[in-house]
Image (cartoon, rainbow, N blue to C red; front, top):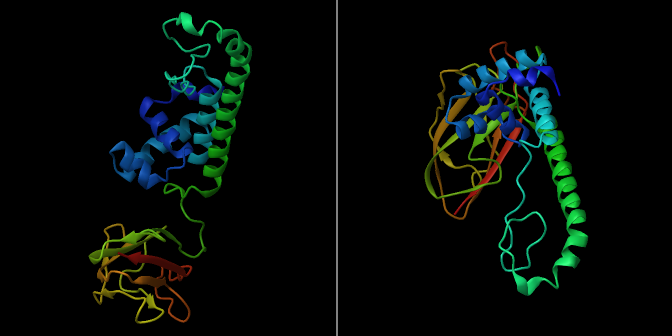
Length: 248
């Protein structure tokens, strides 16, 4: 076990476990009832205690420790009381099932081994996937790279209720406030929106007030040649992104 794991606080462990389960920084903060800034402080403290440079690596170390520790292993599934009870499940003895018990005793250990192995494989898969795709809010973008979209509202591919809604796009860094390109591919696929977006205090999120019509499919470009006006504070244009969603 990594020597720094014993120094992690309970709150730091909670944050790392959510990351290992596939949460991004924003959704993990919402799940824990805190701001993204507070979550990032806890992740930073965890990285320092573990001596690693990324939160995804800290989450992987904790997940590996949890997998090996019997105290944090996933509990056995609840018994199916409609079927004969298997070994390891506390249940009152049923004299009527005596004839069935030898067969279950002979196979119960193998079933438990398969369940345990399956859980370990699933946990390893979750950690591996999270390490590749988690958008870590605390990892600063590399200098000279173009800004990229990290979140949208509505989410990509979702269906929203018809009527007024907020269309927002969040980038991975502060952006130039008076420069933006919401690209219309056609009149039918672009909702009616206010002419100018609002910019968040951290200068990362642009929000337009729009109206969706039931039964419509929408496509909105976030930058798209030749319209590349979403730029960061150094003047680098953001990577084009196409947001699609529908209204019911």
